[in-house]
Image: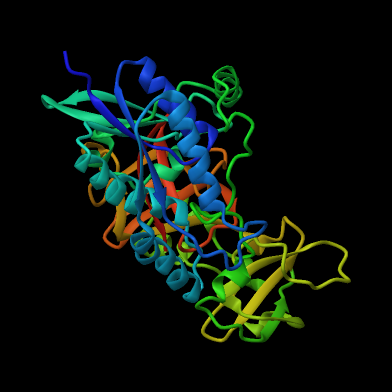
Length: 400
C-alpha cells in the first residue's frame, strides 16, 4: 500500500522538527519544506540573518531524519498579505495580529498550494493544537481543538482557518507537551533540541516596533494626555447589556471605545506618533514622575493624540463589550453559526495565552456583539477575538 504523502513546514525550530519525526513514525511519506518569508532585518532585534540560520537548522533536521528537503520563497506574498496589512492597520490606529494572518494567508494558503504541487495529501505544522472529525448531516466536519499542553496551546493563531484548510492539515504534536517535545528532540540528537522558541512577529522575529513600522510610517510628534480614573468618561450603564435581551442600541453604544478627548485630561508629555502605540501598552512612553506606571488607554491617529491612565487597574483599560463587524465574522464551524437575532454562551479570548473568558455572543444586524461576564482589559481594535465551545475553537473575528 502506497504511503500517504505529507509536506511539513520545517521552520528550523524544535516543534516542527519533532512533528516531522512523529509523522515518520506514523508511517507517512514525509517531505520537509522551508519557507523563506522575510529577509529584511530593519528593526529586528539581535538578528543578522535569522532566516538563513533557520534554513540551515531545518536542512540539518531533514538530513538527520532522512527526508527530502525543499525551500520555497514566499517573501513577496508575505509582504503583500501580512506585512502590508500590518502597516495599514497600525496607520489606522488599530492593533493587528500578523501571526493569525500568516497562518490564514501563508501557511495554509500559499504554502499549502506549494505543498500540493509536491503531491501532498496533507500539510503539517508544529502547532500545539489538535484536529478531529465528526459527521454532521452525513458529511465530515473538521474540529479545531486546543493543544493538550495548555501552556502552549496555539489554536488561537489558527482561528481564521476554514474547513477546506483544516481538512488538509495535520498537527502531529498537538497531543504532546513541550518538555516531551524537547526530550524527543534530544534523544534524536536534533540540532534544534535546545534552540530557543521564536518570539515576536511570525517569520520576522522580535522587533523594535516603532523602528520596524518606520519603514512605511513616518514619525510625527504629538501630545500625551493623562486621563484621571474618576473621569465622567467611564460612567456607563453596563447593566443594559447584562439583561436577557439587550437592545441593538445598548450593544452598539457600549461596544464603542471610550471617546477620549484632551478636555478630559492634561498634557504630560510628547510622543513620536500615535500609530506606534496600542491599548494597554506600558513600555515606550518614557514619561516618569508618577506614583504608578502609565498605560495607554486610547489613541487618536487623526489628531495624533495618545491618552494614558495611571495604574494597571485604571478604568480606561477595561470594557465589557466588543463588536466584530458583520463582514469580519468567521466560523471555523459554519454548521454552528448563529443566525441574526440569536445569542449563545461561549468561552472567548482576545489575545494569545489569555485565559478563556465567559461571554455571551449576540448576533445582530451590524455584527457579533460579545458581552463578557467580567470586564476585559486592553481590548484593541484590529485584534482577533476567538470563541470556543469547551476546547473546540468555533469561530473568530476582527475586533471593531
